[in-house]
Length: 218
Length: 218
DNA sequence: CTAAAATGTTAGAATAGTCTAACAAAAATT
DNA sequence: AATTTTTGTTAGACTATTCTAACATTTTAG
Image (tube, rainbow over all chains, first blue to last red; front, top):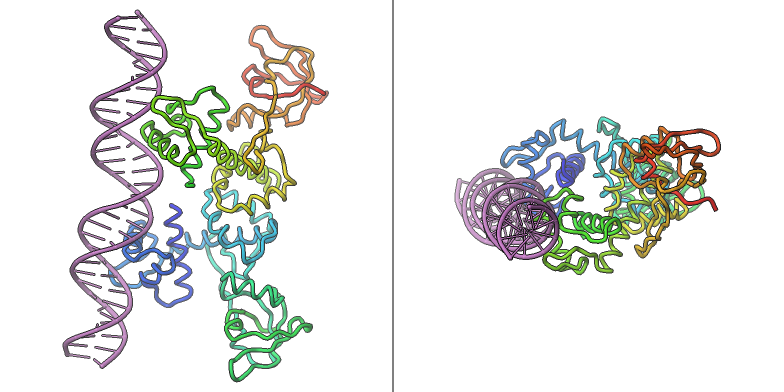
């Protein structure tokens, strides 16, 4: 498989997780590649048995395609974890580099990284790392936005990996694993006053709270 | 610069070190790419100011080209070192992977690896790692083949990175840094009986001795 | 339910990098 | 010096991936 094909599969996989149906236009926007190009590539991948394609119908990965995409995402996330844990990069700096390294052709290389990291199950953003079969674990997290006043939750993952969002979370001194107690929700703008790790108070806009994924305290 | 262009520069750099003059044919063989393709690529790189090119004349890198090639080789060798020291690969396994990772677009990535390795000056095969300006240190080593009986020398580098050669050196239990005392040279086939680290005796064919690079004991 | 808007497709062209076939120049050999 | 061999070049074609322009279908809105 070429680098280009891998990128199409990966994008389609991600879009399929986020939306019920994925259109050629969605894929086109997500890859920043014009529709006719996407159209022909989708046909090609359909010919290879990686995508179900019928004219004017939504796009879907076949099980082979899903597995292939999962394996690429696995590599991406392993690399991100490695970059953070062993090369000292910030979680806002690793995406671009992982985007390149994920295409390296060497199973052993990724196996070694997996081993070096002691077989992690999540990446630096809290996203699950697919297993060696490309199977991805379902994570049942809630958006902080949807939680009620007085609840205490644990920060498990982020809903966006946008640079500016990650940098903001850093600035707010929030880290994965932190406990968050919701002190007050403003009726006017749905912003939240929260207590982090029973120590520091922070004010979070609704937009930020929408991208903070949490689980309830067990 | 594209991956392809980088590979042409690197190959030309290596050939220039090995031979007085480098022809289009040499480059063609080294890259396993047909002459007409090489011819047009060389013209392109000449247009970019990386290669001096005149019809029917030997090929030469410009100083810009030399620097660019040096920087790619730097990345390659840093990565090889990393693969051996941190991911536990053997020195016979790292070339192919480094060949891919050397093209990653991220200065910081290689800077971090350099730092993690504590700024190494040689790669796992004893070859010098070019500095941040692509400048490569000259190494004045002798072929073991050319040394005389009774001399004691130190194994500093290998003259070939062929898989089969490296595996043989492993099998002979020879490592960079080992001392080698030449006990006897057979007149018939120029094979050498040597004493390694004052401990084990080995018999080395002339072909092996020709690819073992050494310095005299200081 | 028809018209407009959005989405999807086809056709044809562009670029990068590769090739083969044919020809040209330089080098080696006799 | 003439011929052969080796090396180098040109021309033209192919594949992968991209694009724009034109057209088609589906969906949405009045």
